[in-house]
Length: 281
Image (tube, rainbow, N blue to C red; front, top):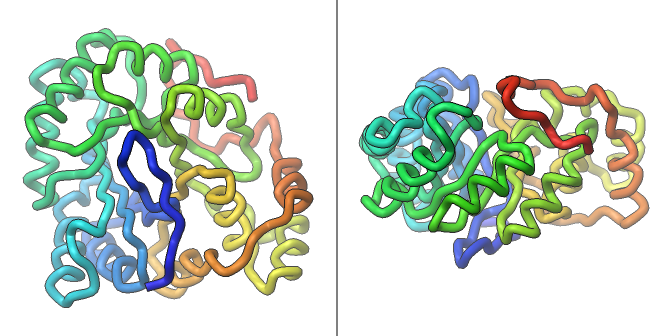
């Protein structure tokens, strides 16, 4: 297997490149998870709301059965949906997700911040789900810095990542800084900006200099910052391409040029409740 960099957070080692399953129908999720593990991915991301947890687990079992991977070598993440944030409801969904997957998740995230129930109730429930053995570690998804700090202050356990949209057109420098301040990490969803990067002139030029594609350069840019990336695809060839990013490095100048692509209207998926506000940059 191709060696790949890991990020250590609170003693947990997380592969910096993962495979996402958002919007994958169950048949595609099973097929692509198994294929991703064959290719060498060791980090799989899903969520209750994706309605494919069982299929993700089947894909993992397929790969394990054929000897492509051992369970202990895979970092598996799922998420608690916002309707299940009350104490009791959260632990029940965590239990059901683990049963659907057929594996205890390595990481359990709160999918979006919600004002009600109060953070205090939800964080106690999330910690309890971890204590009951429904996940090895816990974290967040789509939390702006203010709520990230508030959640960590309310959590006994370290919140080891905050999974958010991040790509060259969206600055998350404040949130990345917040994660480092808290001893946590950032995980990037939609790291390829839903395909927008493919025709970008700057990314094409940098890619040409390395014999790579704009997508490979973008993923390299993300993980070179110490940010976890979880691209997803239904194409096996694209999954192979996305994984082939460990044999080159971007220069400081190239990294800066890609940072320069950020735009005030770069966000592609904004489902944040009106109770909260994204960081300004």
